[in-house]
Length: 101
View 1 (cartoon, rainbow, N blue to C red):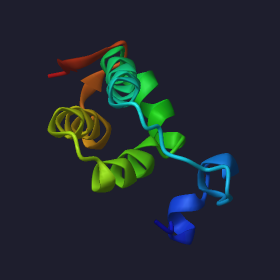
View 2 (tube, rainbow, N blue to C red):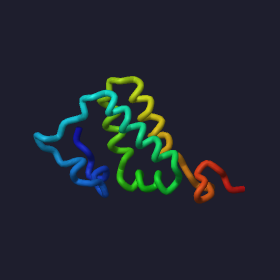
View 3 (cartoon, rainbow, N blue to C red):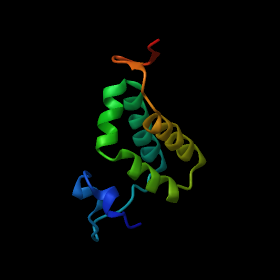
């Protein structure tokens, strides 16, 4: 999968540079645990999600979901993506799910 220039901008080059040593994780349990770890980071607060957005985590998850065969892992990826794409305007700092009147 080739990334667009805009998708690469701001991303760690180790994530998009190609080479013979780039291999996807083959263990399904490990892939699930990695996605769940990102999901937990999303749930910890707004700053964590902002940091994940800056690191282009959504782009990597999108590519991962395109080739993922496990339905369980795809569901976790989609949950994580929902956190990352959510509009957080009107939320109170330090309490990402409480809306300010």
